[in-house]
Length: 364
Image 1 (cartoon, rainbow, N blue to C red):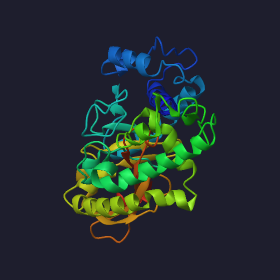
Image 2: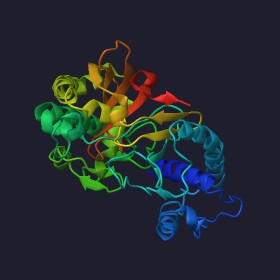
Image 3: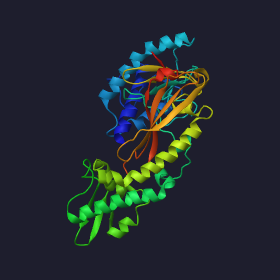
Image 4: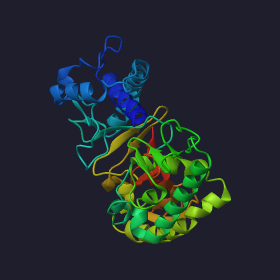
């Protein structure tokens, strides 16, 4: 999480500093100084910067400087579009600071005195959209949605993984069994003197084989080593077979649910980032103007298909386009363990928007 926070907060605060013409060389995240006249609530923004950016392994002066420069660079690009829309450059900003304070828009940096909601910032050159709840995809959810919708297949998958890892550990006493990376942090090791296994993660467990197998249902920190092993060994056809029944069941059910749900109203439009107010989408190389739901017209779901992902991810390709057009934009919908397989429950992610011009995004 620290790495994602580093990228997120240096880019967002950097853009804000660029907009405010702040001095990067003297900037101190512990005592940030910005032009209070340009901020909706300067005390709150200063406090948020000192909380979110001023952390070990988060603040990066060089990265912040790059994004501050990026903020200055995009001002004339955005200004030109604002003039086309009959809008002036905003004089007051706000920062979302780790949350989306207004669910009706997608801005990280808000334009307070403008009809444009602001700027959404992504640190990678591709177009990453959002992390919706399963409900926003038509999937009612409580807890681990793999377990919820394919209980028998899920338990079988995890049990086979756990049994295989336990067997490997028992055959090599004192050897750490886990993934190719992070085996120093997340692993299983056999303790022959006690005939038990130490399952090490952010929280650890020492237990017998049967005690471990009795706990496979609920994801938790000590299970991370088992998940890492599965991902590292997925290319082995035998290991891939462990998850095949679960993958087939979830793919069939989720595809049907998404097709039904996203075909109605403006649901697919909201999924691909359209909101009640227009905004600008900024990454390291491009700036897009994203019109409002009202401006974009009737956007329709065209198709959903299985992307046949590998590892513990289940992925779909979704295509959408204007009602009377054959041209489509495409996104990827991922159902995945974002914070470690078996460590926490899986999440949804919508990313990699392709051909955004076919759904009204305007490259500036």
